[in-house]
Image (cartoon, rainbow, N blue to C red; front, side, top):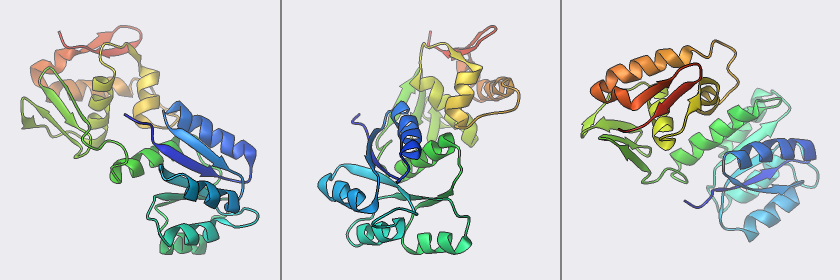
Amino acid sequence: MKKCKILVVDDESRMRKLVSDFLIKQGYEVLEAGDGEAALDIFYADKEIQLIILDVMMPKLDGWEVCREIRKDSKIPIIMLTARGDERDELLGFELGVDEYISKPFSPKILVARVEAILRRTNAIGADDILSAGGIEINKTSHTASIDGKIMDLSYKEFELLTYFLENQGIALSREKILNSVWNYDYFGDARTIDTHVKKLRSKIGEKGEYIKTIWGMGYKFEVS
């Protein structure tokens, strides 16, 4: 699948690098702009950009002006970043058609999770994305999972966990890696919470629960015999 292209706009180079590094690590292609004018130039020059992460306070043109300009002829998803926790700013953002509003400081992993959710919602990623193995089928677009054609009743995290297993068939996954990938933020609790979710997931998928193999002292591996 072709990489989704994201434009990151912030006048602070350290912030751009922080956000860009996390997005690149997740497989996205990233373009950067240090001010509003440069952002518009890049946006109009590249028709493949699928999402914009836009800081509010910038030189030349601020984030609101950039957003207004873009909204004249595009409905591309926009995430606004701001250092101010002003409710009026947030309301203005939604009036201008902003999809998400995140106040600084924020966790880059939370930002990446929001990016993924928006891109899934707009079908920029996950369109017709179906995973299947051993009679288990995941439809990431409709967010449904089935066994031998019968829809399963899974919680949101159970669905995400099963999807992650199918995407990483045959790979040994540590509990920490699963938490980092499925929960999308730094988890400060006991990593063994994974064990509880795996136990519930095995129960719900019945005899096919044996596909989720325990690797003692490490984590799990999904493997169809």
